[in-house]
Image 1 (cartoon, helix red, strand yellow):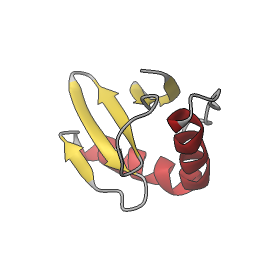
Image 2 (tube, helix red, strand yellow):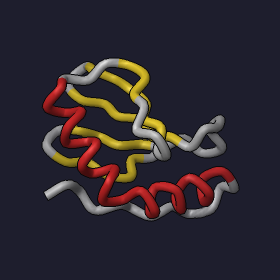
Image 3 (cartoon, one colour):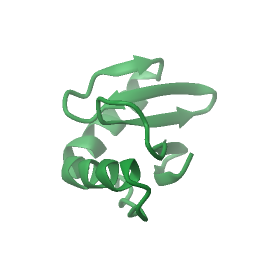
Length: 85
């Protein structure tokens, strides 16, 4: 699963040709979840502090995430996305 960003021990990834709706995967110290790009809905478990950071990052990079989603659905090279600072 290609890593598109990481910050504070949080790893953000996407699968090539993954199922809809557009989403990304989050891993953090044994926790795993998927986040819907449009709604921010979380499937899985993450600590509250991590949820807050990932939501802030999502708000900053929603357009880039959707662009990567389209690229990955058609096996095109994806872009790395800046971490949360």
